[in-house]
Image 1 (cartoon, rainbow, N blue to C red):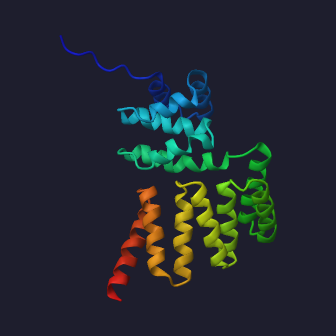
Image 2: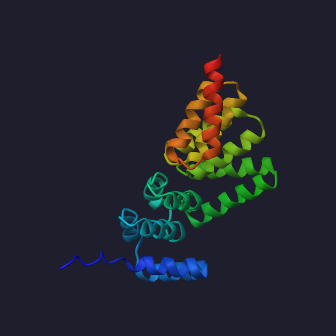
Length: 220
């Protein structure tokens, strides 16, 4: 008698329906009706790649910063689809840290940066960091303000702090590399870009930058 096929979780059928319908709200509703975030995190270790894709996507929609480690690990999953879903969704977890008021203030900072209202963005980010010094994304956003102002030393410090709090924050590692480049510190830039690539192997533009810097340093 042959072995019976492994029974797949209900999440897989929910995910397949989402892929055909592309209805995000329905996907979230169906997942939340059946699964806790803890169960979704366990399914991120499932042997079937499509189940892992579904679990990571679901976490990025329904969970918060508490699932950062699980989704951060998924950035290095053996399956490229899982890695891409993690890359596209993990920032939403970072933004969901903190209280509703703190998240609102962070979104305000991000909007001000997009509108190039840098003075207002800096003031709001400063206030948010005083109130929530553990909020990694607040440091990352303030670092962007300093970068736009070409204050690379302050931008470096904020990016480093974002990474200290959130070790999966690959955009902060990229920002550090860009700051070091502006300062002419190519060796330090290379180290930062390598760190970003270790965190997120999908960063092809960073891989190219690493190759370019390696060649430059070899020719010196």
